[in-house]
Length: 472
Image (cartoon, rainbow, N blue to C red; front, side, top):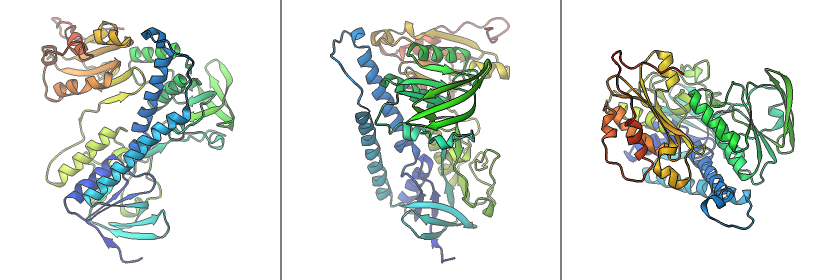
């Protein structure tokens, strides 16, 4: 083994947590190296969050063309240019890369392209993408290696060369008929976008419904939305085998409650979950344990089972959101300087960028009932929101779960601009304020945010026996 190069910190992976840790430590004058084997900046700015929302918005524009008469617009023939959609996405990705490179230069953190693995305690070998190796050593090592789309061992699936979200976002030709494996939120976002571009779309879901972890009213709302847009849903489906090649012709063999059937399409998109990138890294060599699912085992401070090694983001089993990975970075950063931050009990807000959006924080009704937590339910349709009326975007609803001491237990918004409603609710929840603090605000008219005042003005009063979960 060659003499290791000494660093103050080694960061493996340049996703949200890894790049911020590199920039933070580098800007403090520390000698930091960030190892990345694929895309500088990780998935979010390159192949996930930002590019996908870019494409989703292009699909929204396509829908506006389809709805032109509704807004008094008379237009001639129009068409979707998928090459143009892709070019707009690529322009965003290219800009993101330049912004990241500028941050590395500004912070003086070194970025190197290659695959890093442990070869001894506190020692990492990098197989450089350009060829050759480097051996690095540090007393502090941070892992942020992310996750990848899961390709399940279904006969014929891998051989059909199915695109994941990465390749789907790069399509320059519209699929004739897209089969989407998985009714989770990656699959739902891309299914709706491709349908709005003009493709026929069928979602194949193994569970009894798409978005199966959501409350029944949310599931019903999304299913009705997709039905209205012409998206087919095949649920309770067990895939037995796949034949053909995605991009040409592909056949999926299914077992349904009513028997066996087949579905044929031109393209097959796999969106059935995520697998952590923790293989072949030599973790066991240095005593870093992993979970049965393959995530790096960490405590509530994101410390691994090896001294001086931390794991953050998807690879650590944190909720798979960029904003959670960023909070992982903040947790480790602060604890390095003597703080006592913990990931236990933190807020995990989410927003799914179907249209209209689905945003959520705190408990769902299903979770509250399962845990036996009493609540009062406030719920109003988006149809009552005057701003939504002006936009002709009245689908969906807002709902909140309120405790007996007037605290907000959970909030769900399924409607236009739903994600933008989360911060004020989160602030009230984190500051332990009663829901009346939001209800009493003077909110600008007409805005979507007025819906929060309307929603929280509809909270039912306490009964003599206190709040009880309503029956459905």
